Image 1 (cartoon, rainbow, N blue to C red):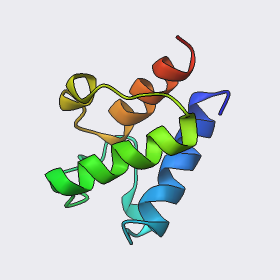
Image 2 (image 1 turned 90 degrees about the vertical axis):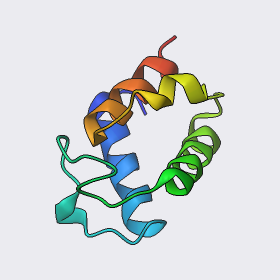
Image 3 (image 1 turned 135 degrees about the vertical axis):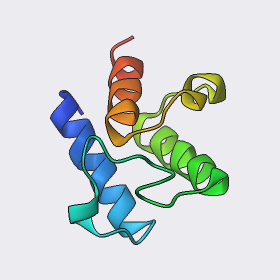
Image 4 (image 1 turned 180 degrees about the horizontal axis):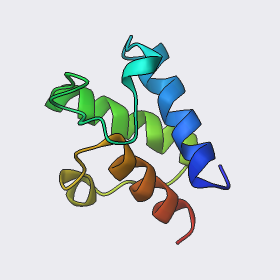
Length: 82
């Protein structure tokens, strides 16, 4: 995952395959909780999936501020390039 677009594509794949969301519902401005109907357990599962893919530990505190798909992309991209 070299670019933010790569991160976005990977995240979209996870949300479709593991969380059974419609791919057209996944937009950068989509709110994880309101638009995509994820709950706190789903958020934890998403963090675990992202950790498996990136090989990096994702801080729960950093993820608390995440609200949209774009927020997730930015957080993962920053983590990958730190």
